[in-house]
Image (cartoon, rainbow, N blue to C red; front, side, top):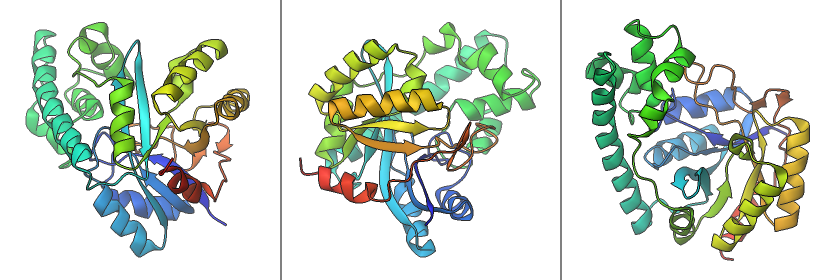
Amino acid sequence: MGRIDLHLHTNQSDGQYAPRALVALAADCGITLMSITDHDTIDGIAEGAEAAREAGMDFIPGIEISVKGDRELHILGYCIDCEDRELLRMNAEFVRLRGLREERIYAYLEEKGVSVSRACVRAYAAGGMVGRPHFARALVEAGYAADLKDAFIKYLSTPDFYAIERPKPTPRVGIDVIRAAGGIAVLAHPVVLRLSAPALDALLTDLVKEGLGGLECYYSSHNPNQTALYLSLARKHGLVVTGGSDFHGELVKRDVKIGMGVNGPLEFDDFDIKRKLYAMRWK
C-alpha cells in the first residue's frame, strides 16, 4: 500500500538533497505520500511537487517554522498556499535574516580562532540556504572537528553560538501565518522539548488557543511509550495526528532514514491524512 513521511528536508534549508533528488529517494523507499517541510522556506516546494507528480506520488506542500516564546518550538505547516502574500513576505524575510546570520557565524568562528572559507560552506549548501550542517561539514574538512557531531559540540550548539541566532517570530505569529496561507499548524517532534507530560499538556493547551491543529506523534526518535503519550495528548486536545522522519540526508543526520524510526518503520499509516488535513483548512 505504500508508506508515508510528512517531515522531509531539502537543500533549500539544511538538508542534503535537492528537492527532485529527495523525491526520487523517497520513491525508492516506498513512500507514496510525502511532504517537504524545509526550515522557514518554501523555495523547494514547486520543484518537489512537480517531481512527486511525475513519480505518481501524493504530495503535501509544507514548511517548518522556528518560533520562540518561553522556548524555541518548531511548527510544521501543511497544505499551505505557496502563493499567499504574507507567507511569501515571511519567506523573503527569513532568507534575509539567514543571510545576516551566515555572516555573523563567520565572525563568531573567527573569534574562536577558526577560519573556514565561504566557498567551501556554500559548496556544501549546493545552491540552497546555508545552515549549520554546511558549516559543520566545512569545519570537519578544515580539520577543526573530528566529525559533524564534534563540530556541533565544539562550535555550533554552544551558548556563545546561540547568542548570535537570528530573531524568531512568536508561536502566535508563526501559527497565524500558516493558517492565513490556508494551512494546518502542527507541533513538531515533541520529544525534542524534553518536557514532562503535565508540562507538554499545558503547552498544548496554550498552543491550541493560538490555533494549533495537530501534533507530530510519530517521529524517528520517539519510542513506543512516548508515541503512546503523544497520541493520548492529541486525542485530549482534538489535534490531528501526523508523522515523519525529519530526514535531512545521511551526511547531516546519519541515523535518520526516510520513513523510518529508531525502532523500525514509523508505523504512521493513516492514508486518509491528506484528506483530513485539507478538510481542516476551512475550520
